[in-house]
Length: 354
Image 1 (cartoon, rainbow, N blue to C red):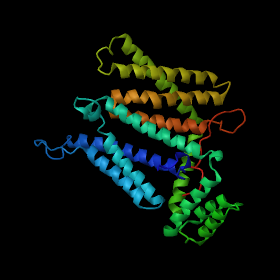
Image 2: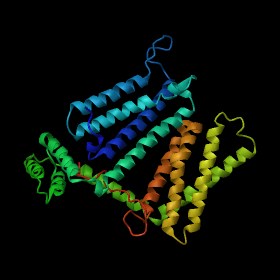
Image 3: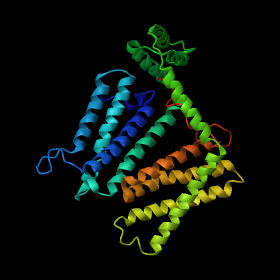
Image 4: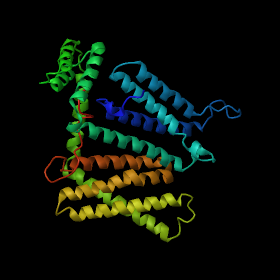
């Protein structure tokens, strides 16, 4: 009999694992495309023979290996390995989506790049939703808190726990009088100590703090707002000129070009509205600019990848950096009176630290 889905308990670091899965897949697609372009798109089995082993097959095998890893072995390290191996497999798999949606020479089917982008965008949106749900204190029931601590304690039996992990886990059990929680507290106190990777953690934390300080400066915020508005307006004007001059009529991807135009126009309208609000309400102005950029990332980039293929990666990287800067500049947070703006959680999930 199947388990009741209502009884399923989300893993403590599920969002981090989804992020790793998606990022591994993105890197795999980019590396695969770059390698095949440099190698002249060779066929495994020979160009003259009838045998051709598509790399979609290797992707499926790696995804199967990831599933077997997670069902056969215990511990958070195995989950991370499964996310990494599965992400690489998914990247190899989704890279050949063009062959599955058209009768043309599918690997070079132009909309394939847009479909690949949509796949990874949905994965990252899923990670964001999982992270927000995990950060909601109302969802962290006593049973889920106990399950998260038990999961960490199980890993500590074989590989030990750092002092930080032990403290955070015991803090979740503080003041609980349930027998299972008291037994877990005794287990946490008994598992061996593991030395943390202090130098690596300190270096990573210092780098993140420095980047955050730089991104929160007025100059960085002003440059981000200026880039968002300028890019959207220039792209809108350029595409309107092409449309008026009839230069889009012979474009095989005219529908995608119109999609870029509509997305750019929406981004430009939101960006200009943000500039108009800047003197009256800085928070509202930044939200509008953030929404303008988000419109391009979630909608416009789908069509840009269709038209420009993977040359759109550079612009996407710039857009994501600008989105991060504007997200840090937003003063409103969930729970602040009268703001209604979502707070970006600081950790990957509620629960114990891994």
